[in-house]
Image (tube, rainbow, N blue to C red):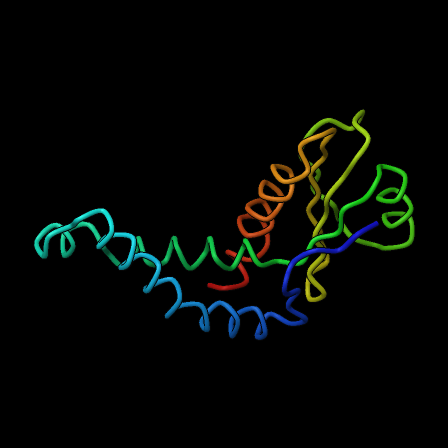
Amino acid sequence: METEGLFAPETREGARERFASLTPAAETVVKESARQMGFDSAEFDERITDDVIRTAQESLFASLLQVHVGTREEFETWQAEHDYEVTEVGHEQVDNVVWHVPAFADRAVAATFQDQREAAVGTLRRQAFGRIYREALE
């Protein structure tokens, strides 16, 4: 089993603080991307909304989450040793699983994959944000 990613918030408050800390980065990424695309001032004001910044912030947060990557057997061993409700996406007959477990939640999310590890990690992080963090950050 391997672990990758930069953070795994220990508490809801820790998740909220980390999310809030990403606001300036999200604003910078969106504004610089808009400049690179050649938005004039009017188009910039029309298209770069708070919702666009929020989406960038959510994407940054999700992309930094710590995940565990392992074989189906490693995942099942972990699952047997922990009492979490797990939402698994993908097919249960493939060899590998990536999962995320927030310390403050009673649930985890997992995604299966055969060969496309990077795609599974990305999917899992989006699932984790949508299924766990979105509610915790409200």
